[in-house]
Length: 371
Image 1 (cartoon, rainbow, N blue to C red):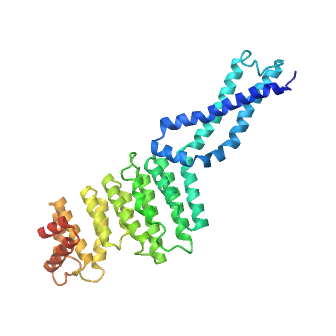
Image 2 (cartoon, helix red, strand yellow):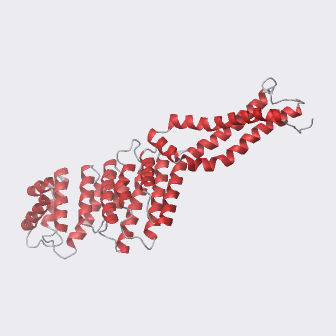
Image 3 (cartoon, helix red, strand yellow):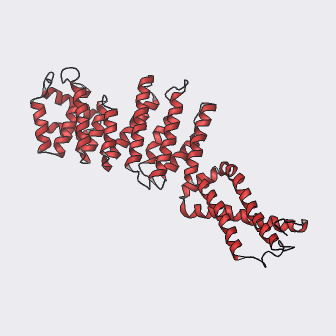
């Protein structure tokens, strides 16, 4: 026989039995790998959306399994085995056995790669965007699953992929004409899960991507007239949380992105600046101080208003953290401020202490008393 094989009907059941064994192996190995390497929370998501992956898996896996069997059939036929299938175990050749194993493992590795959480991140991202385009509604369960994949991501690369999909979703939603400024509340309320409380701390690049995304979203809300709506409110709140976290981790460049984003928002500048002071990150802290001064001085005088109150409150924290150098800087500003206090520094300090005390910033109020 010269490469042509005739398989009798009696051999078909054995043929199918071998094929089934190979398929079970190629599907079972990835399952075992997932059980050993993937957190339970991630495995639950993979099981939940497994049908989506199987639709993609079977087309390439089945041909590979058939290829393995036909290679064996060809080799067996070329060796003139008249009934090779029933007696394949007795006539097995080591080299061809290794070839079959290699091909089967290759199919398994393909499935493992497709099964990977990295693939599910892309699947979920596309599912979210496609559903919003068709229905105008974000799937809450799918969004929670995407955030969970980000929370339990084992590497910076996985977290980056989650952030990329979130950024695409935000862009798609805010670009639609029917966007009302309320559709992304759940996302912005829970975005911090990817960073704070994650068993695998984010990298500085992860934090930078989130800062850039939030900054772009907030600027878009302003330009679209959605400032003050739910999405803007929650994006602002989450930005404050992540900015403080970045300051605590020493991500100076990331913290500065947030201070520049909120350069006209004295409350946010105060919160971020104080967090930077407490973390010993004076570079972003003084960047926040620069914008606080601009906001307080924009009217031409330092008056009894929130902008001045936040500037003075910042000075209170700076002096407490650095009594010598910081204290000298504060004293120099209060004595030689570029804008006059109206009606006086004493009255502005009294107003600032009352303002912060009424906003439950009791420590800031106490520090202002020392000024």
